[in-house]
Length: 238
Image (cartoon, rainbow, N blue to C red):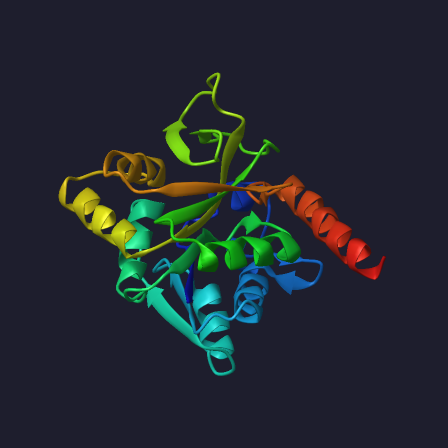
């Protein structure tokens, strides 16, 4: 199974708030966010980890090229207009098997993620998406489901059927890449519109609840993410 990381954003909000490091290299409890994700994926059995960064990310590029000497990283350097376009650039490295995709600033605990990956590997669904009822996003994508937690829709605003929001972790199969290709051909933009297209195309998508997922978009989010990850370490010791 392959894993991929979208890390092609500018991290402009962090920079405006005084963060000198590019977002992928921001440290959480001493470890750069992107390295934490790569090593976590490898512990989950990743054959390789595909990463996309933008053309302006010289510090991140240098860091990953050095890390590439030790770890199986496939690196794409290209600026893109949206995360969906970044996903498309990565798609050529994902082959024809199941894969897991996330953004570099999506922070989750490894034990929950491990159960999520195991469930997807055993599932016959076309995709499984991490969801949470913990809302920590400026523009959350709300998800409606049926009683069996099959995803029935993606919404910009909450509805009576939207208990969860998207956690930004996508486990998908080959059919999802066909939808991605059609989205590109049709001029669709934004990851949430791609997800809506998955439903239109009739893919069987399952929601997998996480207790909590946080994003690092602002400087104040760094401390919150570090505390969240420390909770996992405390639980392991207990």
